[in-house]
Amino acid sequence: MLKKITWQEGKVLSLKLKDDLYTLVQMRKDYYLQFFDLTSAQNTWSDVDLRTVDTLFFIFTSTKALKGLAVSELSSDDVSLDERPPERRMLRAIIGGNYGADLIELTDTFETIDATTLKSNLTLANDLDTIYKYELSGMIGDPEKLRNRLINYFDNGINWDKSKEFLFKGIFPPSAKIGSQRP
Image 1 (tube, rainbow, N blue to C red):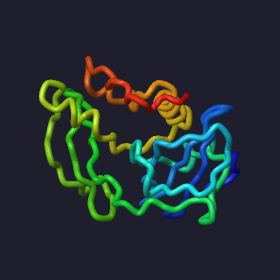
Image 2: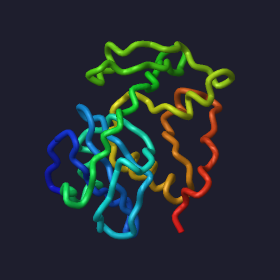
Image 3: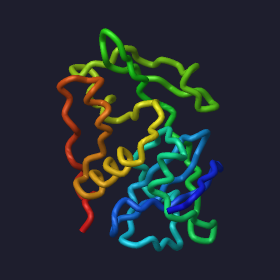
Image 4: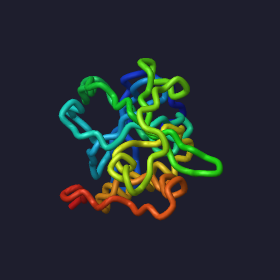
């Protein structure tokens, strides 16, 4: 594991999820990370073009959450950075009497506080696809939560943040993505 992780836009880290499962993450804007639908059985990466790899999700994550997972930093000789625009739509949790979320669009500087609300009070009946599609805007600080989510996707094809189950009572995870399971 890397002993120290400093934030640098464009930095790519290799994450060890378990003994035979590694993936890559790219630092984007202010603790906004891009996770990719890409694995390796070993921490060996060369000629990786992240511009052509599907994105799993974008989330805000502390460097603390990465410390328990990151094993190496890739050089520009090994990887081409993804320069596609990062996803700016996210879900902002509503906590209180009525739990749920609003669909928001992050500012140009990727701030959530002044984000534009695109749709308020999403419901399972009317907005299930939106709830499945977009990530929560809160910061993830627990490396095990992140590890378990990624392992579940790479082993079972289900890309799911269990935090949504707290906000939307009765919601079930989405169906598995066909062809995403590892051989």
